[in-house]
Structure formats: structure tokens, C-alpha cells
Image (cartoon, rainbow, N blue to C red; front, top):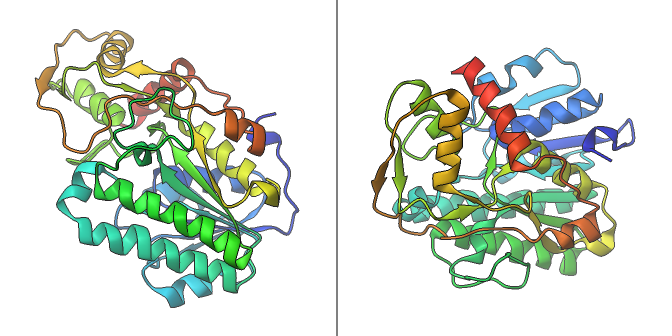
Amino acid sequence: MSYEQLHFAPDAVFLVTGGAGFIGSNICEALLNKGLQVRCLDNLSTGHRENIEPFLDNPNFTFLEQDIRDLDACMEACRGVTYVCHEAAWGSVPRSIEMPLLYEEINIRGTLNMMEAARQNGVQKFVYASSSSVYGDSTTLPKREGGEGRLLSPYALTKRTDEEYGALYHRLYGLDTYGLRYFNVFGRRQDPNGAYAAVIPKFLRLLLAGEQCTIHGDGRQSRDFTYVDNVIEGNLRACLAPSEAAGEAYNIGAGGREYLIDVYNNLCVALGIEREPIFGPPRAGDIRDSNADISKAREKLGYDPSYDFKAGITLAINWYREHL
């Protein structure tokens, strides 16, 4: 059963933080397509108003231009809310190495503000974005919950801390929290611009513009690239999960493993382009190999990703061709 077939009570109210961002706006859209009430909280620091522009006239959609670092704003946003999908955060491992204090302020304190607001307002489920970066320097493949290594970046530390708070809030206060460790999400609306853009949209932008791409490292690093619709499913499944599954973190990936040089070559073939990449030095803080064991999410959340890499990348290429 795909997420389109999942059912929620018609009076359910969702709060999506970071709802003007890449993943958040896709979650908002999926919920609105179900006719559900959606509040979007975003300060537009990394999200974009254009991502939610199509929803602004929808009577079921409310946009709150607020900041998760403001506890009062979080409290107000959570009033009367049934489910929170907490996507608001600053991503990018390299940027976190440059700005560790800001990442602590947004990703840790902001998430704690949201958990506390959810607790005080009686929210039923608090689903939050974690990251595969919490596996650090562990070389074990596939990555399995409980097999984490030493952390490699401030970003990874913020996500590990969020998971500890999530577990604590469940044990101490009874808030049903579910941490979702995303594995290299890609798809429609992912920002292709800027120094910290994710690799797939950045490659597509440069290739379509006739420019050369830089691969950091030898290109043999691997990733479990996960199409955004799988992440939507993970969030909605977690919202419907039993309390027995709360207080834990779950891998949300496609369960595959793609080498970066192969991804680049496949994009070139799909676009009908012949262009050699530039190979640069490896980036500090990057995990070498990543591949998700999704058996825990499958068993406890009912997560069953509908899109493998091939299907997802085809949809992504078509979207960027139309929008770049």
C-alpha cells in the first residue's frame, strides 16, 4: 500500500515545520491532496516561498512565517495540532563544519523547542528528520540502527542529539516521537543552486547549463539515494505507527547502493551529454559509503518504499528538465 492509500481522521491537523523546503513542501502537498488541514511553519532561511505558492489559496493550508528558535512561535503553531512532521533544520555537512554554533542553535535548540511545544499541546505523534550521517565512520554495510560509529561533523552531532532528545521525551513525558534517518533524499523541488546544493540537483543544473561537474573524491563513494516520495511515505507511516514503535530512530532509504561516478554517467546518458567530470579532493566530514538496512522501519512502521533509484531518477530528471 502506497502513502496515497493511507487514511487519517478527516479532522486531523498536521504541522509541517520547514514546510517551504524541499522535503517539507512535498509532505504538505501530499497531505493537502488527501484533503487534510496543514500548517506550514518556515522562516524561509533555506526554504522558498515558491515551493508553497500553489498551496496559499487552499483553505486547508496555513503558512506561518516563523522560526523554530522562537519557543512562543512553536507553542502557538502546535495549538490544536494532531501530528507534527518536523523537517525544519539546516542541512549540509560542509556548512556545519564552517558554522557549528548556528547548527547547534537551529538543529538542536529548535528541535527541542518543537518537542516541548508538542508535549505541552498534547500532540499525538512527533515525527522528526534525522540523518544517515549519524552512522559516522562506521564501515559496516548495510547501515543498521545500533551500529553507529564516531561522528564526523557538527551536522551529524545535531541529528544524534535530536534522537537522544526524542527517546528521552518518549520515556519521560510519553510523547510519541519517531526519528527518521534519511538517506540522501532527492527529487522535485530540491534546490540545485549554491555551494551547498545536494549532488544530484547540482549535477543536473550544471549538465543542463553546459558546464563541468566536480566530483569530490574518486567517485567510488556510494550512497543510498532515496526518492522523495519514499520519504513522504516514511513520515505518514510514522504518524500512524503504534506507540510501541515510538522513542526510536529508523532508517528511511531505498535499500540500494549507487556509486557517485555511475550516477554521474547515468545522468549524462539520460540527458544525451558527453562531458568528463573534474575530480576534486574529498570533502571533510563526508561518509564514504552509505546503504540502508530498512528492515526495522519495514517491520515496525510498515514502511515499504515504492521507488527504487532508477524510477526516482527518471522522475527527477524530467522535473528538472521542465523547471531549470
